[in-house]
Amino acid sequence: MCAEEEPYNPIMLTRRFMQPPPRPCDHPAGEGLHVRDEALVIETPARGDALTFTVTVWCSWCAQPKAGRPAGELWAEIDAKRMEVHRRVHDVVRATARGFDAHLPQETEEAIEEALAAAFLTPIHNCDDVVIKCSARAWVALSPQVLEFERGISQQLLESHARLELTRAHVERLGKERDLWLGFLEESGKNWRSRFAVQLAEHPVNVASVMNIMENERREEADRFLTLVQSVVSAQQAVNVFDLVADSESALRLALEQLGVRLPEPSADLPWERV
Image (cartoon, rainbow, N blue to C red):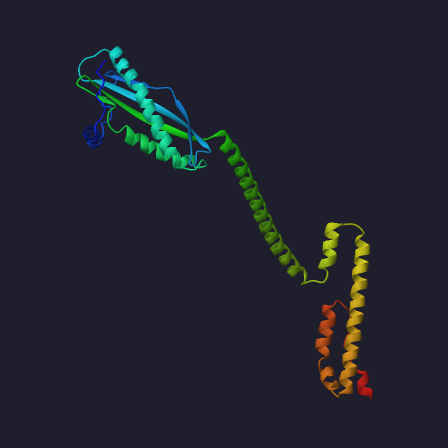
């Protein structure tokens, strides 16, 4: 096992961070030793220390001998540095997580991974015999207390969003139904028989009775129209414009025919000519 290094002094610390980042492991797969530790679970405080994050960290080791050394000695070198690395991981995770609120696991995870990458930028151990490198990956999760609270909020947001979507779908359906009914009513207004046709379409029974009601209502409507015409004629006679109405007899006949009233053929013997 390599001798322990002396504690860092400021000059050595500066030299350590000024070194270029280590190159990725590019030696053959059978050369050196690669180890991945079991997950390290850390319960660390968030901003304000009242709530916590659950942080899971995986440390991956690479021990590359500079001179031929048996794998057993490389294992010993990694074991000798494991406690120091775990302590550094705890320090980095704790210091970083305290800068974030307990409901921001994604932002906290990104910051912790950046801090761990910076902390292990250079080799853990580098001597004449062996180079030991370590890299760490972190996952950050909400603590059970915060998770329960956030789950309740998420469910409320989900229900609110679902109600909004249902309202939007209902309004869209009403709009489409409105357009269909408008077209139907506009088309039905072109023929006075449409109301009875719709009635028979909904309840196709008692057809003769429906037709009888239709004719009676039409006759009553024609009578009301004739009464109105008679009133207009009387008013016009009183102001000496009857000749104008008499000249419009063809227009009056056309209006009555449109109402479905059967009219006799025009007579050449008009009663007012006898006066």
